Image (cartoon, rainbow, N blue to C red; front, side, top):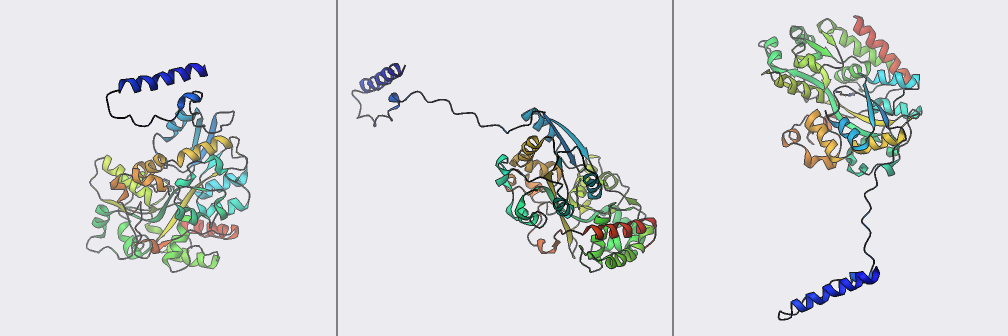
Length: 394
Ligand code: SPD
């Protein structure tokens, strides 16, 4: 066989030499391929290591995944994904504390991920299985170290901020000749404004750890204070506007888009989804996530693999799939969220890239309050204070 190849190769060289007899000297002969055996075909790139059972159980927030992402992952890997949703960090936390969640991947915010890591609820990631890990934005990974020193357990799903969402068209009508406040938080916390805006609907996120921190920030306290006395002050302020709040909901996209709420304490990405949905439904109202002059609270939702995950390899395969530039870009283009994926940026639609409530301007970043965490005792005190406020007390 070797000989045969050699003969053929020599023949080729000779034919070439003869055919070019009257032409200028030929270029130097190519490297001597003839003496080596035919090269073996390049091995197909190794696919991810998968578990025997082709199943993956994911627990994530609602309205938080591009439409075809699961189907594309299933097609690429043959893994069947079961996808459930939760509406608050508290709900996910309760599941983890109860144990045996049955989920392989969950998506906590870092405020809760820190105590969850400390409680041993998650297993360390095997980064050798994450070939797309290098796509992540180092600035985002550095924020995550506050919850997850050395970035051992978490990778970002998306980051955004808690702020005031507004249907400007409806709010302007309700305010009449009262001008918009300089500080957007006044719209949801100051009785002069809430008493007027109640007619078109005020909505709050339905969770102690969403509302108390923004209320603390509004009254000039540390948003991540662990001091229950501060929660009392925050709920005293909140009590003054309680009667004006129409809705408590952590899935308020349709409430804003459908006109049940004209101002809301919500997540910037969801407010942007509401704006897009209202447009699709033919509304001409101007709906926006605001960048308050006194700052907004940034949050980072992250993927973690549960300690007792039955499909850890499938989980790594999904995480790696999510860390691809295409998935990162789809999070911005379809879901209005920044996935913290640097390699995705060239694939982001220019209109999305220009939206400063998705890709926040450097000029606003100093006003973004970074996430921190609460002690378990503080979270309990916060829940008590919040529930009393919701019921109508202080
Ligand atoms: N559409 C779902 C958005 C998920 C937001 N998570 C927010 C956590 C903020 N603390």
